Image 1 (cartoon, one colour):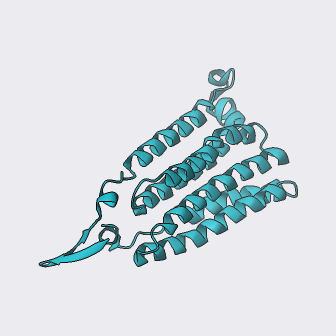
Image 2: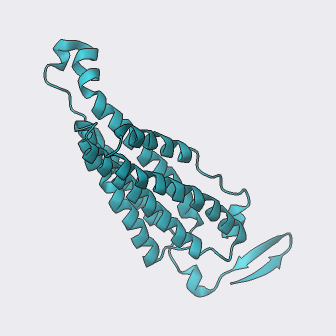
Image 3: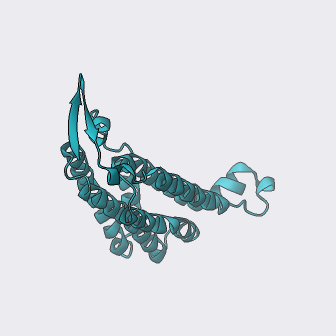
Length: 220
């Protein structure tokens, strides 16, 4: 790739091969659709108990559904955080390649298991196996995001600003994946410690790393 100056602004002259490569728009659209389905499945698992109308809001709905609602809210936040970080990651990928698509599919695969783990946890909130399974699925999902980011990072090493951004986010993602991984064995020690991890990790990622202001020019 060569750069030429035309008057006030520097422009990037891409070779024919790179110009003809597809962008990441279809990957993002496909991922958005899958994530929307994941959230829909979780919502469909919220079912009213028998006789809820007769017993009222508190005794008929909130009390019996509390564990399921808590697991749903936790999972919704996790899926939302993963989507926000995915949405901010994809524009930094220069082109859509087969490796990028498959690393993205790997992330979506693990995310697609979140509704199953959420339902299991909601029905057995204090069962160590349910908590451990939930932690494992979340760890695998965050690790999938990490692998996707590392791949994107590997193809943007020539862009210093983008590389620095990825390095900062990778550190945080490794910590998140490690904490979720720790929640698996800790579930058999104390489910409350694992539950605390389920709250702490999304809080770490709630506001993703801001992209550098000069990033759009760097990606041209």
